[in-house]
Image (cartoon, rainbow, N blue to C red; front, side, top):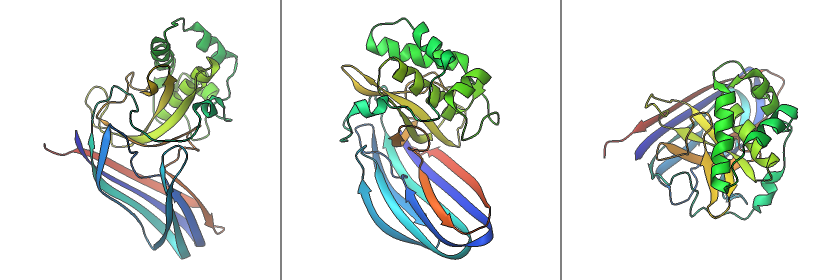
Length: 268
């Protein structure tokens, strides 16, 4: 599939800030399932610093904005060709030992309910087990906007029974780790939902280390594995670790943020 992506994040401050330093993980991953063309990243008033590929294989760029400024806009645009790899992350180069992803973070710490749910999946084949864990989260956490927030934990989302893709992904990685399987959080974009409806937002899913296959993606929110509608940006222990934009603003004003993401299919 040929996709065109536009992504704009605007930060506004009620008092001008003196300086802003950002780390951007906004360049698509390099693997057999996607090939990037004409990818552009721009930060209004920004000075681009050095870029590097980290141990997880993600491309990181540093940007600095010198104030005083009362707003900063981060714009991304580009084209990408995607292939359906049945969720398998083939050809992706990284140096981190997969066992690193057995570690939990505060938002994925399991409670008794997560432990019980992890133990309820009875499949023994590694791939079937991963699918079973993803299905368990899909059935226990309904997709609903506005009921959780960035700091909602996997345990809280399971207790609530509702959440967004971030919550599904945190809960799924928690279940996999409880079963002794490395799992990580993936950030990216999704062209449409499984029923074909437009999905104009950033998206998240999990990757689980499956014996004999390597890293395999599972989108518990949409009850599927990533296909050619998905664009992978990067990964981490949790949403904060895999965040496309991380930064520090120097100033005393409050910050407000607006995000616009559009993923369009280009005619073949």
